[in-house]
Length: 175
Image 1 (cartoon, rainbow, N blue to C red):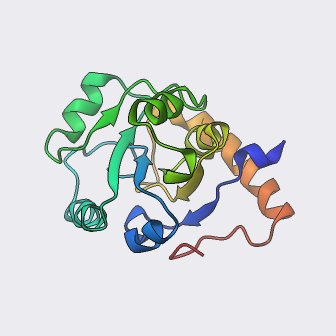
Image 2: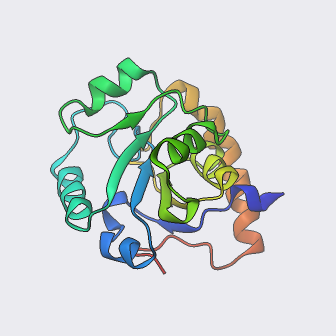
Image 3: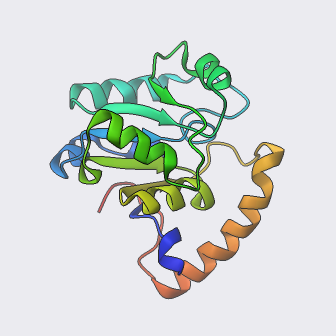
């Protein structure tokens, strides 16, 4: 049962994910959560770090798509300045939004990875869709009020997962 919550990799920050490594693994598209993964939930303007990572992905011919539970308007406002395509109302932890996007883009699960900061939504949805996942640390130590219960459950799940697998540690690169 715990396997549903286990990320493929645990990388400290999205910007530590090397697009060349992704390319070598056959990944052509990165699905990513938005809030506290790519941008701080309380600052939707993006950062030079995000823009640089987006450039590196583009250079490696890897597309970045935001897959979020937020509304179309909320995500649209947040990504307008950085020009990212997105999927709203993804219904994570269900794999609905991921599966819908895989089908629409005619992608095989092996061509995609999901990046997110929450085990209880992002990683669970990725595993449900049969795609690889990268858990990143949240950009900020604080969350929107709606996320706080997930964080409490997540601590317990992480403790159990790490108790079963000593290799589940934060890394600076994909291994």
